[in-house]
Image 1 (cartoon, rainbow, N blue to C red):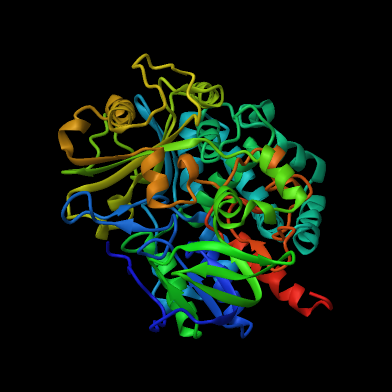
Image 2 (cartoon, rainbow, N blue to C red):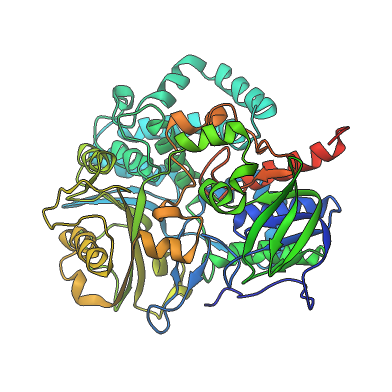
Length: 536
């Protein structure tokens, strides 16, 4: 693995007492640790695996000379996040790069493309469907006006007072009710009628598929629009050298502040006394936390493994009964001997692309997952990593990945191959073949360029990162019934857990998935605030 395996100030044994213990060295845990260290706290970060990063890591195990992003890959939210920006990670070794085109959607005979320049994007849409070019520019101008406030709103602690005021002012200036209506319109809804062709609907619907919100449900249009506009505005950046470059820079910054970071040190238990988290047990000893324990792990890990059941507050017991994970995931990595042999090459090569026959077909695939069926023609989110960052593989080759969702509980296989949901080696490889066939249909001869392939099913993903329970990568569903004040369960919306001194700092907390650091930042700020309050 080219990302650092261990980082931090190492001693012969764990410290007896620190101000705060952070459980998990993923991006949220590292953001929280940095903010607490900035405030002058002594902080210990404990990571169960051999490397920092959580679901933001890379490896070189597939084929000599190739680097694969093990889990996530493109980071538009990180590039747009004020939390990440304030860390000044460029001073700690992070370098971003962007692909020639941020986002594409291949179809037989043509591509829908988001170019780096909105004018070029508009020109492509205009050529395909007269009038759509100006409609795209209108949409971009609307985003210019409301986008920063909307992101501030989404990434702010709940209730979002400052972010809400900024977003509300922007919406009021630009036709509040009409804009809100469009944001609430499903990705498949009539609200996209400003476009006469399918290009914008393909891009927005494909981007909506990054989350697990049904394409005909409120919220899907907003998420799809945000992701598509981030592609247009920020270019879907990646860290040079691999995903782990982002979290390695976070770790280096933390260590430079005097923080202690231990890898290969799983936390065995959060120690609770008299309704307060007072530390953790790890490596056979107890580490006392004077002020706070922050769990940068998913809800099933924190409450299912690290906190004793008898210590669960009543509202946690109730919430756990209804907590809903996002769907499971299957991811395929390829080392290719040459570029993807597209039957119809794009005018500019995109870094990220979606595979789906139409918005309606993508909806059919995601609906099959929602109803317990393994999809017959899965919707794919995919990335051409060498196209994006030439350091990822030898010149003339391509490091490629694609992933899709599958049900946690399989009641049938819509593809007719008898996949049962065991997700053993045979089933994951069989489904990997189905994923590969989706790309082969658009790129004849694709299979002939495969030097090596790796299929990571739900079990493999969880084995590599325990927080990805059952292969769920977002810490819980992104559907509206489990967001905002409903995340991770009704009446929450903030990082507090019902146990004094214990804070939820993962994507299971508001505002949810995406590498933006907001859950970690919110937890750190809550811990700092509670410390200043009398009686806490």
